[in-house]
Image 1 (tube, one colour):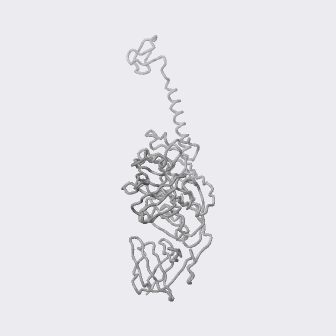
Image 2 (image 1 turned 60 degrees about the vertical axis):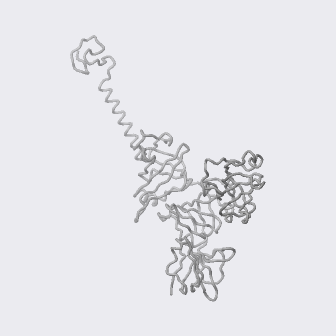
Image 3 (image 1 turned 45 degrees about the vertical axis):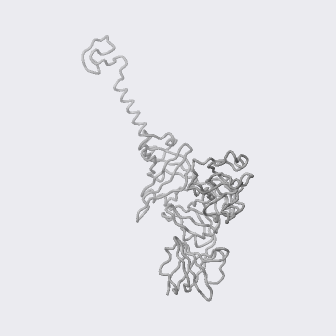
Length: 443
């Protein structure tokens, strides 16, 4: 007989070829190989069809993704973590991205060109806290998933509950839930631009973050929001202005005050406390937390803290002239005011459209227009203030952005349109950027 592997003549009674050592007894037939190969092709083709027709591709956990998954078509299920952001050139948005968290890890989801346009066309725009199911191409090097077809994105929106601006603005850290979806009614009374988006004040009480992604894609119109009494949908987020240092020991105030000698000279951090008293002359604030009180010496900026403020404190616990206090005087020390704010979603309603009116009644949050002569002005780092004399009365006008201060000088006649707010209890007309407010020289 001939060996089916090397083709040489071999004895009929051997189980192994003496020339190539191929097994003759357990050799897999060519027909069997064809059957196995065909089966693998069918399985691979079936998976490909499922992948590219939106079929039931198994869900992968983010923690299990690795190099072997590079360029694979995978499916993920999780929650939008934070707000989306964009990359753009002078003509258009080139990339839309957001973070997805499935409880085992976080990954960046990327959309490009035509997929972004389809996202807007079908109104499939991810918001903070949305539950999403998504399929796309995994890129190991950047730990990201590229969405190539908007049909591969399913979004489950959570229902929003009504909440008053005062409740959110005054809430302590533990009272509300991070990521909770809410809606509030109010007036946009301030607009400040940053690289990541716009911080807008609602009724001078609560901060609203409008992500640049929604602004750049014309999803959220700040101009429309600023022209009326609006209802805005979004998600709660507890914002910490300063990130604490790991070298400071986290302690509760009662623990310190009950064991002062133990903590004498220690660098400590109080996660929360409430200001109950302020002494500007001594540069101290008295705070309360969990049933205990302590004085906090603030070398710089004590005037910015008011009774009722919730604060986070990082400083050195010392005995000053027989009194235990926390000293905030070194470079890493701070007193900050963490607070609840809203990350805007894509939905809003104008409940009451407002027009700019010419009258002397400066009702708070109304829109006013005046025409008069500039009799004084002050320009600051970011803002400007002008005083306008109109119909035998002076008006204080605050420009939130000094970029709006163009061609203005003493004796110039201007038209001012803005929103009425109170400053130190007195009404002023605030001119907000990115709205229909304006200050224009007319003569």
